[in-house]
Image (cartoon, rainbow, N blue to C red):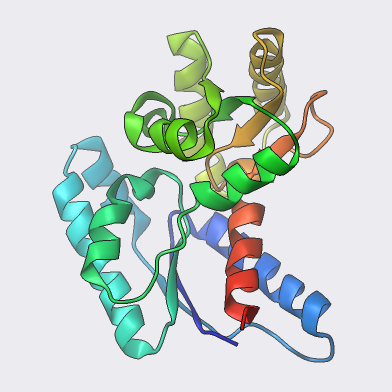
Length: 232
């Protein structure tokens, strides 16, 4: 079994879900008392969030690259960056280390293709929904058509719920209803599935919330990490 190097803390609410999903999958696949061999470095998210807000991406890339290097030196066989937004600097992190980085979009693309979906809605932070780093990977690597909420106010709402509620462990009924409305509007525009493109959204939205499949990046990424760790 390979050792998984997890870069967590963005937020720790979702990082705890990674740890749970990874170990539950190892136990299910391997049986007995098996659990994952893993290392996690949990960053101070408040500092990273400040870098995001001030567009200090170079600083954020440097800090996360240092973390990845530390995990490699500690014995990690590959890196899992437990956040969608910070994959904006994934290439910088990958260039810093000599071990693979398992990109969060790739297992999501694979799941979408298995489902036969070609047009997807995307929810996430404003960075994920509005910048090219994530959508371009879905379009180019996945050959997918990607829709985001059309109204600026809706994108702001999705972003605000992530940072002000889910990242601090708050799950509100009114926010769930707002997300369902926004997802249904994406479906009305032709989305055949919805990507939960922030690792905290799975705390709020569950399969069955709308009429199309949901692709939870947290669960898909964590499962892919286990499969990679167990592969020969």
